[in-house]
Image 1 (cartoon, rainbow, N blue to C red):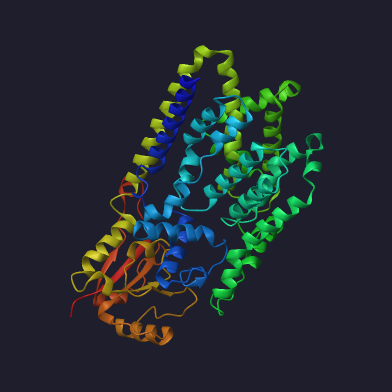
Image 2: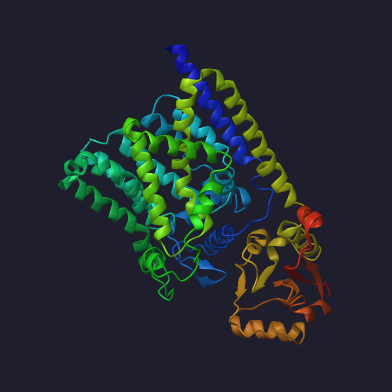
Length: 502
């Protein structure tokens, strides 16, 4: 027994080690991308202003997501000495890897380990786990709640209920109310089976739910009490808008109804055949299929129907389905290995090859393609030029309709950035003196023309914004990165104006 336990522990440690390698290699080597630029900008403004209760995006109120996902990033930034690609992405990376525990709880020994290897080598899951958003944190919270339920599905103690609902509350504070909805949908088939729900209709459950609701409300109450009176946005109102209104009457992200028929298969590559074969096996032999596998099929189906029924659809919304699909695939593979033990070495080699491939693509090639250019290089060039005239922390930054990702790379310990919004009528022609006069008049702040860096963005339609500043400023533009040099020419980017020495 001791030998078997040591063998299982060694296999789990190997999985965790390989997973850490896949998640961490090259993590900070690429520029910010897509939605993570919003988390970076909001967290940076919290750190610069010291206001952790009023989220702002480029100086504009932006309470579309609850506060704790930003707090995780700012806490990591404090621990790591500042906000950067590593501290920004680390909360997503260290999200709990609970699919192993869930698989071992539901099925025979080894199934959870197989599911862990499948998930660790699933391309899109790895990709999003290395992106600073709340999506993978939500997935891990859902898995944690489901795992906790399966540790004692018949247990009716108050402590059991309280932990379960607290997990739902915390998960919902990362991205939205789907933290409550998704575990409920997954577990609904099991609760309805044999009318198990009846034993949970008691006052202890109601009390636990009230405790969790109180915990969920804490960030919103703090924001209301300690936030700026002039902030103008209600966190709870935006929760309703983002979760309820968006579901029934979407105002953006309106993908076609077949969106997830395309993206669920894509998001489970390269192990798509495994869970499809598992689904086929379970449906063909439904009566002989283990009860927990039947529950898994029902739960996966309900999640798919729920996301499809929503009017708002995006590719990565399908992420919460991926672990459950891979768990079904792991069950199929476990059955196959049980029947054909001789095929085990071949599958182990398959997992090893998939891990090496993912490491090369996500950990090496992708970061390299983002290197030697982009915003990272722009910030280095700006700093190199600026420190010729004054220490970096003495410079003020004025960001004019700038890309979300720029501020994090240009941060210093000086004054908080001043953002010129798209709605502001700033002078698009003239000279530097006119621009600085307009800036001081509209902002009500004092800016030293010789210590102020102005940054804006250019595009194919507007290739030379604020070009007149180039008369007495050093002009620094975004350079193409390695990937752009090989495959395509950059048509947009950012341009910085650093004052020339007098």
